[in-house]
Amino acid sequence: MNNRFSSLALLSLLLAGCSMAPDYQGPATGIADRYAQVSTQAGPVADLGWRDFFLDESLRGLIDQALAQNHDLIVATANVERARALYRVERSAQLPNLNAGASATRSRVNEPQKATANQYQVNAGITAFELDFFGRVRNLSDAALESYFATAAARETARLALVAEVANAYLTLLADREQLALTERTFNAQKESYDLIKLAYDRGARSLLDLRQAETQLETARADQAAFRRQVAQDENALTLLVGAPVMVPADRGLGAEGTLLVPGLPEGLPSDLLTRRPDIAQAEHNLRAANANIGAARAAFFPRISLTSALGTASTSLSGLFEGGTKVWNVGADASLPIFDFGRNQANLDVAKADRDIAVANYQGAVRTGFREVADALVARSTLDDQVAAQTALVAATRESHVLAKARYEKGVDSYLQVLDAQRTLYAAESGLIALRQQRLSNLVTLYKALGGGLADRSPA
Image 1 (cartoon, rainbow, N blue to C red):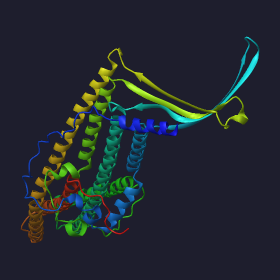
Image 2: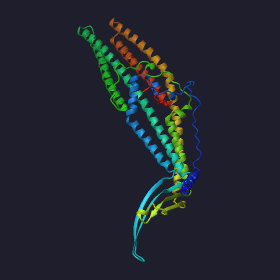
Image 3: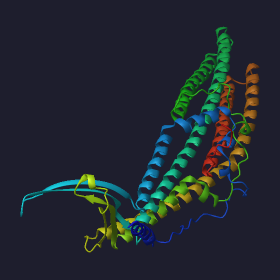
Image 4: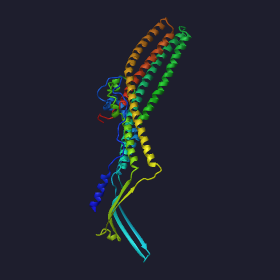
């Protein structure tokens, strides 16, 4: 009997044969062979771990905290574990489940004479195991596996987005701190000028117009100072939310040069790298594969479903004789069902599966095109921001000299104080614009790193 039971189990595995899912073919992406803005360089950016890309130790510490404590990432990780468990559920249906059971019954029969009968039974066997002739169970398992892979890729997308968000929030905080320091220097200079003009006005050497113009500039600087104090506090709150804990960024941290915060030379790789490197594109492809497998499961529903039931055990009318010789029992059964008329339910399920596949194809193509657009936009910005920063730096130098000349001409009585005010406003705007452009250039590198599917591997020692 043991040989017969083993043969049945082996037969069930062999019969799990054909699949009715369509052959998977990756859809056309329509992306170019290379980026138009720059020449291709070797070394995909996805091979560059975030610890290798971000050089600032304070920023690395914040990213470490965020990856460990961010609430959205915790949810994404839990979703991965849930998808893994669902896949194990579907996969288990491909193999026979061996169940053990025991029963005891007592019955009374009145005719032809009153009698009481006992029956005790212990058995082990397979209950309703589906012989997967048409691949329904296997396709459901494949779909669950691809959904698990898609969920895992979604978590990687969330991790990469979180790293970029923390980095950009950090750069924003540093930039706003520099803006605050600029407004404080400007306010102090305006206060000094106002005090001198007020003293001269009291002596009759300056007009009331000069005094009011200096006061206007002073109060403008005071308002800017208050605005950037608020902005710095809000930047710290934004970082706290992303990191999941209060943040401590040293006061001496500034934007500095690119090489002190980020790796300045970032290899672009080929556009085709996006298909394998960006986790959001990988997620879209796994969703497409899952939809493809669901079509196979929906097609298999039109064909017969055959289930196998078998058991081997022992039975006796007395509990004490349950395991004595001659008490063995066995049974083998098969059940087949074929849908004949279901009011179009199976066809509707197949139509849904096909529509889901079409949606997944469109989502995949959209993810690829969005990725290519993000990289192209970041490269366009990268190719112009360096020139813009250089021009803005020259503008700051020119306006600073202009301010010195305007102040000297005013002190000699050649020009009115209005010329000094104009020079001060121009210098302040130029210096503020330079800070913003330096932050924008650094943020552009972070955006490019993310758009190219930047690597998340921590290759540095813990």
